[in-house]
Length: 304
Ligand code: BEZ
Ligand code: FE
Image (cartoon, rainbow, N blue to C red; front, side, top):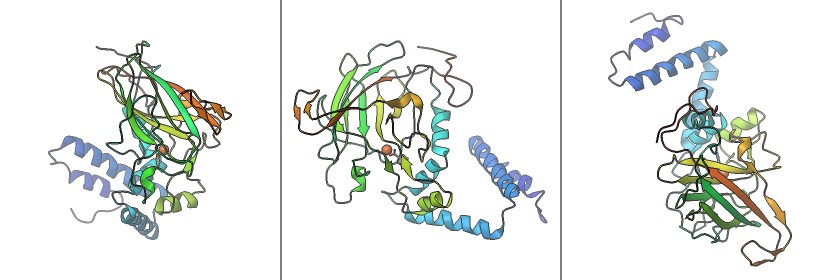
């Protein structure tokens, strides 16, 4: 085909994919090309702007390595990660809602027993976390595998401290037979996502801040239930309504109770102020799905 023009180019590009043997790939690329072309027409994209975009994506690639994933950060800050999370986690009413995974999960974090201190030396005010894992009928879910991870009071995850040899403020434990679990950690504080690269420059140019409200990450897995990836957010945080990655759901906001120095829930004498958090996680049994718009939670079918 020759002499393509602004009116014919989209259909001509799409026709080149007609023989792809991979139907799903064809569906995705077709939609992507249509939307990209619509976008260029919509804003009447100049050649200079097109090249600026190419340079921006090149910078995103150059700063990305096995420790820094700027493409995920870009997806997070444009709301794409949260959209994909919502599309893939439609759950019946009453289930704990999912939110973004984030780039700071680490496979193979230390395993802990109930009552242990997962902070492992991380900087921050002590926090005593207790919780329960249940199914949708309130049945306790014992032996659930619970992964937790969080930033320290300087706003950094252990993996962001280049000099740190051991894991800090992350680990896994299991719920007891009655679904309960508890551990010691540090009080979650709000922190900025990495913003010293192209995504940070983009946020600045758009008049946006890079902050996330204080939160604790959880990933909970148990046989017979869907894996839950979520956070618990700290009530009262100033960034709850402007999370840089759009991850806040009001059902995930909880009170971190503040306490003066003194007797802690584990019976020890805590020499500093400390906080306590209690949260129940409701898992969705495998095979129970919802339909309708992303994020809506009306149950329509159940099978077991
Ligand atoms: C996080 O909560 O760890 C996170 C999520 C998205 C981008 C950066 C950090
Ligand atoms: Fe986080």
